[in-house]
Length: 298
Image 1 (cartoon, one colour):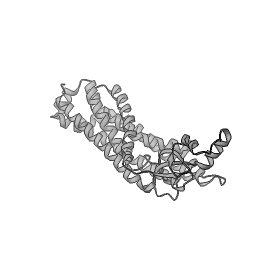
Image 2: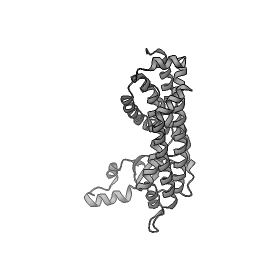
Image 3: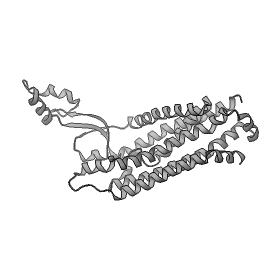
Image 4: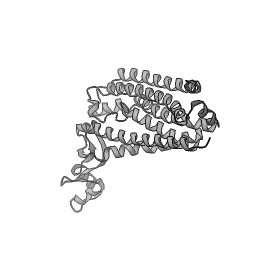
């Protein structure tokens, strides 16, 4: 309890700051998404883009998606690096009894706060994205992918694990935060690539209504023979003698733009695989931290 009290006193202002930011983003995002409407002149696709890509929507959902990750690597770094940097680990270990017990007391409060921020952010963004996409079956759609739901908790804990490991390794809070930020920035897109790599993509022509729920993974065109090609290869199919504007018009009419995409029902599989990769990283970082703390000299 002594160490828990120290953690609470040291991080009270930070916890309040994160909670306040999450609350403000939630209130603003839910209020805006509940009232915003599309002009009657907009098509369904244009309305979808307007609702999901306008500045207020983007600001609220992005803030709620980023806060758990930032909280994760901040509290992860703080758990070990600050004590090492202040040269108080020897005293802290003597008070705790064992290094592992000390590490647990340092880690558990940060994990709980990080998880709470991620849970609130995930639920709030689910409400916002649902309001912005009425009628969409979000669990079977890539609309707002990565902005809502359990993936935010997994990302936050992965960031926590990375911050914990880097902080224990370097013992310098500021440097560890910067390094953790760089590592997490690389890890998250990498995990998504792995998450979607094993899912078969389908070719969807431009304007296909399934594209709203799909995740585009490649862009090209459909050749006159029905093959998916790079748009610049379309001129190989053109009649001899065409060039300039005539060739451009022919290519536009005969090689419609298309995308390779993962369809909406594949979202759960991609998210599960991405979460598994991030969980492995978090577990590996936690294990590495235990080893470092157990062998580190005071």
